[in-house]
Length: 284
Image: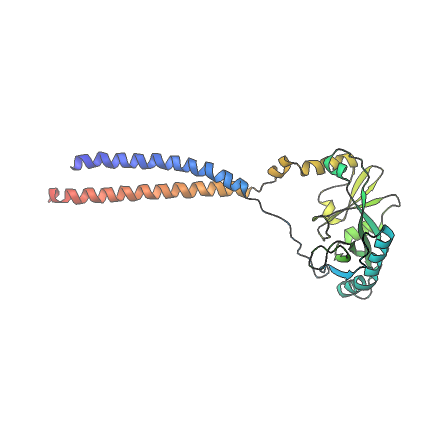
């Protein structure tokens, strides 16, 4: 009997180790698709004391406003709620400059089919805020966009104070021929994370800290059009998958291997104990 049990122990151990290797491979293969399917959204607006949540004021329900009428609504907001927001955030000595209309990238510019397409006007205006004569922040106003909670409000005006001295300095130093482009994080909204650019003579340059992180210096419009096109392509989205996915897959493989090893050791110990109990009377 003991002679038979010893080979059985060896056979059981070999089977467990073989199954452990297969389970580890299965764990790696099964873990990879699961990790690849996990996508984390990255969109947050932490804000600061000087960057208050958007506030609104009612606008006449008269359908689509013309550019002049929309700008008048934006100016009314600046003179009322905007002034109060600036005073609360930066003090009573802060002053607000002239409204500058913002534009959006043309569809052909975004997909690369028309890399020199002129930016399209949008109902968004920006005004620099100065403290002690120095550009300090920017008031961003959108007509017919969203209410204070971020919900759509076609007949309203919303605004936010962006605490970005670089953006304020860039807007204050615009050349007459430059067009301002507002690249929103959330289409149809305004946020302090939005990027701003100046376009002139078929070139693009960054305005403010958000845009400077994506674009350094002055580049041709065609160059930045290709960047935006590649950024939105499926290949680029897949390439931006976090490295944590790989770490999660490796962790699953290690846990599977450890579990298999633990099971094998348990079987081996139980088999040895059983063999000793069987052999005990013979030894006595």
